[in-house]
Length: 238
Ligand code: MN
Picture: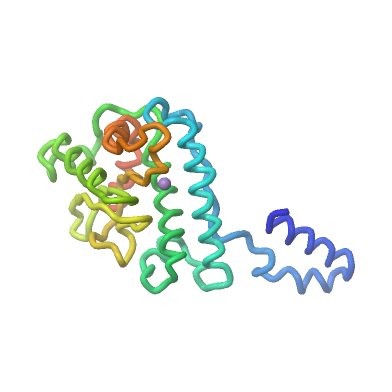
C-alpha cells in the first residue's frame, strides 16, 4: 500500500466510524494534501530517441532515477515550509537547506528540464533566435558546440553542462557537479539554463559505456531547439 492509498483507507475508516465530525477533523490540508512534487510523464515514448539514446536507458532514467529524486525530495520537504514553495524558489536559497534538498531538488528540476529540451525529430542545426544569439556570442555554432562538449566531457565525475542566460542577458556555458544547477545560490556561474546535458553515467552507460564523448556527440541529434528557443525567449524577458 502506498502512502496515498494508506491515507485514503485510513480516512475512509475514520469517516465510517465517526461520521461528519471526523470529516471536519481529518480533512486538514496536511492530511489530504498530495505530495508537493510529482514525476512528470515524458512527452514521447522511451524508444523515441533511438538510436541516439536507447529505450532502456530512458526508461530507467525516468522511471527509477528521476522518480527517486522526486520521492526523496518529497520526504525531505514534508512538514516543512518548503512543501509550499516552487522548486525554483527552493533552489534559489538551496544553501540554507539540508543536503537532501539540494541533491534531490536539483535532481528533480534538472531531469524535468532535460526531458523537455530533448525529443524526437531533432534537427541537424540550431534554429530560430537562439541560433543567431549563439552565432553572435560564440562566432559559429560549431565553436559553441566545441565549448559545450568540452564542458560536458571535462566535468569530472557526475554532473551537468549548461547553456544559460546570465544576469547581463549573455549566453554562457558552464558545468555543475552532482545535481547542482545555475539556478542555485551555490552555483559558480548563475543564470537561467536554456539547454543542458546530463553527464551522469546513468544517462549513457548502457549504450556508450565509458565513451561519454560519443554520447555527447549523439545528444545533438535529439536537441529540441523549439523548446530551447522558448527557454531563451523567457530568459531574455525575465
Ligand atoms: Mn540523470
